[in-house]
Length: 135
Image (cartoon, rainbow, N blue to C red):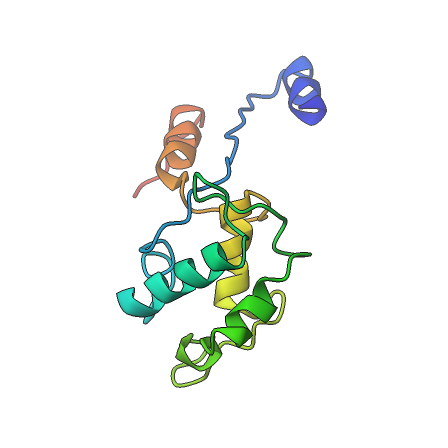
């Protein structure tokens, strides 16, 4: 917020889109990770719920960078069902190298890159640019 106020005070057009925590349901993971089946997504959801890592609204109860979600996934036997970064490679569950870890960070609303607001971001850029780019 302080940076946004400073930019505006300096006459720079600026805006903020706040990424809020997302509800994790049975389809959350398959909707965000290519090649992840709906069945595996539902199993992940059930495992996180059973592990008490989701609250009653389906939101993460702890920061996934510090929570026990990896142990829950391993205990449920799901690791080899999760696609990794390369085709045919399983998810490593490692920070910054795991599709599941990245999606959990997005759900927690603590990820540095979130594509959910691309349309609003592009509209802001196009509306506030002096010379309009050709698309």
